[in-house]
Image (cartoon, rainbow, N blue to C red; front, side, top):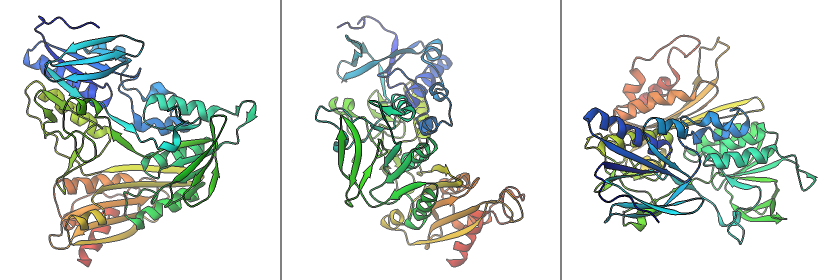
Length: 473
């Protein structure tokens, strides 16, 4: 073991994790130091061989829409180093000592080092949820069963979808996708596009973050796109032959033959290091930073390892998205050097699509669903309105169903959900802006939005939906 020179006096910032949050923090810290005329070292530790990549793009890489893994990387390790970050790859942080202000890390190839810090940023991300049935007695994943979280997983899936035989026996190209959230739907699209007969199995509804009347629209579209959708079920057992999956048995008793299983069951925050060092975590396992992303004196955290404040209810939630990670990392980079930037919270805004076999459905949401709003004590009124994305005589027109959720007493907008065809889902950003400003359903109905026949109807779809709910209330 080697240690840093204890007499060294340069201010040192250590960042653990070199993806979206970590590298946003590292580079903003360097920019802040330069602007303030301060001389700092920024050291980033990353356990993999990848940095600054788009995990959200992995399903499109697997489907073949994106041509190569490198296309998902925003900056190479060499670029980060050229910009001033002391980036150390293929090393795993194993211990944080808040008393000595040191981090111990192990090289994946062997050997251990200790580095001191003045300020520490935790950007360790999240682990994919792996059910017990997916793991062998030896602790390895069953052959053909894999999550979708990082570029190593992406490489594994690219290998799996390109195989035509195993042990000299032709693979029938059947896939089971477990989990009906964003990754599940996107990976179901990828597997169908790769020529797999695909079954999606989910414990509740497809896109259960939506209200049931909206999630049912998504289920119908995914089913129409060639995916066999099985809702309200879990995996009870798995059949393994020669170390490789052959079928899964669902809790409904049905057996589904399959050659690969996609695990799309969500993530849990990677907070083991901080917990061992005595840092507190929330009910959902994430760090609980203040608005400056600080979790303890001289220690900051950002990204998927954190819980975040949901603005409408004012409570901590998990919202593992690259958008938040980049913003939080930037705030860390300011504030580790004495800044006062604040992360303002989240609304739960999210968007995806499913495209297959002539089916094109886009899905988006922001704010609270009906159940969440009711549990929060609001007097909930909601309405689904079906309209179009363009004037009726335009060939671009596609259907759009918009659900507006509001409070009867205050008329405050609480949430919006959209399920529709091409060019429908990005309308959710208008709703998010209204929610951000704590405006009413009437404000949404009457604000000045753009119109031309190729882009919208005279009453823009989201405004038509808001107007009809306003009239009802």
